[in-house]
Length: 94
Image (cartoon, rainbow, N blue to C red; front, side, top):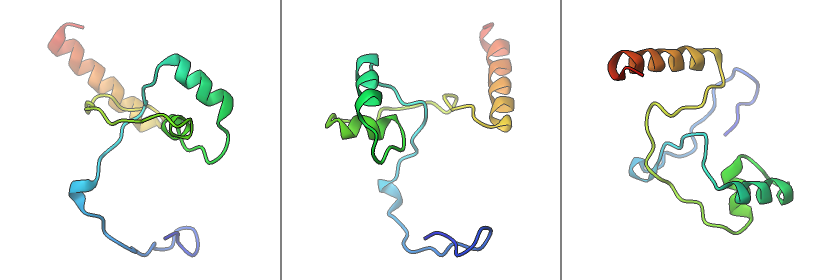
C-alpha cells in the first residue's frame, strides 16, 4: 500500500509465499518482429516489453538468468558493471 506522504512508512498488507516469487531481470528478450509489433500497437497499461507482448496475446516465459546480466540505469550500476568487466578481463583474458 502506498505511503500517505512521501518518505512515510508503507504498511505491509500481505506476505506472499516466497517459493512462488521470482527475481526478474532486465533486459527482457523477444524477437525483433514481436517487439516492433508490440511497440507499434500496444499503448494501454504498459510497464515494460513483457507487458506489451502479453497484451498481444502471446505467451511470456521465464528463463534462467545470470547475476552478471543486469541493467545499467544508475551511476552505481555502472560501477558494478565496470567491476564485473574488470574481473572477467583478469579471469578470462577478455
